[in-house]
Image (cartoon, rainbow, N blue to C red; front, side, top):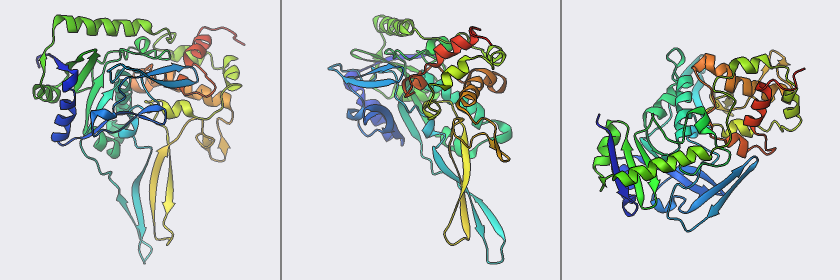
Length: 370
């Protein structure tokens, strides 16, 4: 397919949302809710965070309003797009007992409609593809995830305003998206540079009141993305840390972290690639039926490693070590790459301000070995 580059003037941006709605999509986009930017149903572009900037640091997240006309001059919020494919809580099947005592089981399929998400970040695209590797494995394909995933249309916004906690450039997942989207936007002062990644995106762009992108507009977009990458000061000490982490399982830094970590699980809740969950039964009061459900869980939860009467990882040191060695180490064996996409959410939303890039650098640097 021929590469499609076009310019959509700021005053015509509403036409993109209107086109998606007219095409039958439930539209979702970023909005300010209770002091943070989250994704929710988008009925009008007036709901987008116009002029909003984010200030992030270890254990800190603040929004600041400005007079800027820009709609995407911020890095990310706590949510990502994980909830739109991996539901925080959902019923998977229903069991029913007949009068004779026979049990029947019926699958519960989610009601899904075509959904277009505007404002997806490149790091969240990378996280979505990690989730695909887990939930869409052919030997254990997850039907609920698959049904939601197939109905998604993704409009990514390349990041020109990274937060101080971002390090997607070091993981290779940003600030520009290179795969996994339908349309990519790069916001300029007077509008948006548009690029289609597939035939569906190309067909949508053709229906918009676009103009050919000028060389100046393309140069401004490239400069903004280069600046965004150069602004990132955090980084991991390598992309494949599997060997280094497992060689340092007894490093004293694990205990140092444990003395600060609250085991609250915030890091796993905001992580766009974490997929741990628990399952349980919800019985009807008449005792004749029940629903089997699953909900997000965390490797920091007390019951996560409880097996046959014992808890394998009972203390914070081993819980944090499990999270990090799996995320940055053994994911390479399971899924062919690290589970970290450099979004920095676990740094901003950690109430103790623990920065995994700093902790991993100490552990993998071999300092303080016992």
